[in-house]
Image 1 (cartoon, protein in one colour):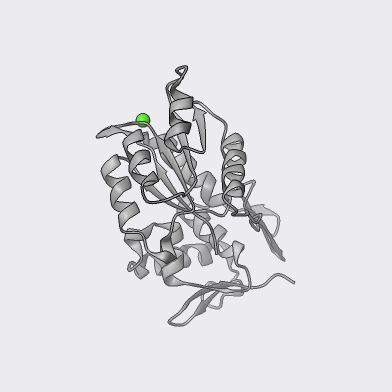
Image 2: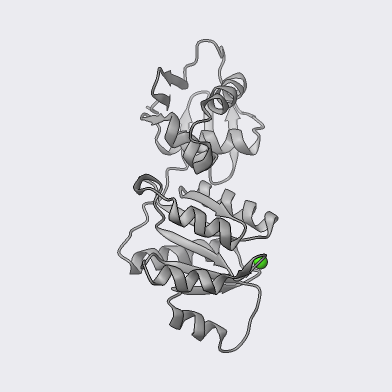
Length: 233
Ligand code: CA
């Protein structure tokens, strides 16, 4: 079961960069661009989509992120890391006093963020199992961390969505991943009924990766359930 992250950030580029990096690391990500979105996602979460960590920007279009931190702490001890563009003496102390686990000033490196997230999760007793990031089964070689897919030694170009879908299957290679889980992890909680997305993108992946897309060897359909990437030897 992957850990869920609620990412609250209004900067579109930063939000998509972080979302992508977190998915590659094996996290489930729900992204919010405002306080209202963050509250809605938090309130409508289900155990299956639960959040294990929150990343919270402070300067949001409909208010200050710290109000969300205060609300959240009245009901939950979920680890929370503040992402702030401001660097003011005293602010960090104040946010930590309000219950933030950590505080990162922008711009920060993704590697540092991931390390701080592991620390925050560990402090709350959650351990982070390293994600499976490599899949080798002749003639396919998939290196998720380096964002590289080769077929018979030739690099295959995938769109970001194709790549995220493949990465999700690599993490559970040999096991069936349900339609719902794939839609949740790759597209987000509002897309769990959109199974036609999966048919479309699996078709595209098969066309790029399979010798005969009509008789797939790697990307297998489990009728009525989901998809499975063949277990490597
Ligand atoms: Ca902002």
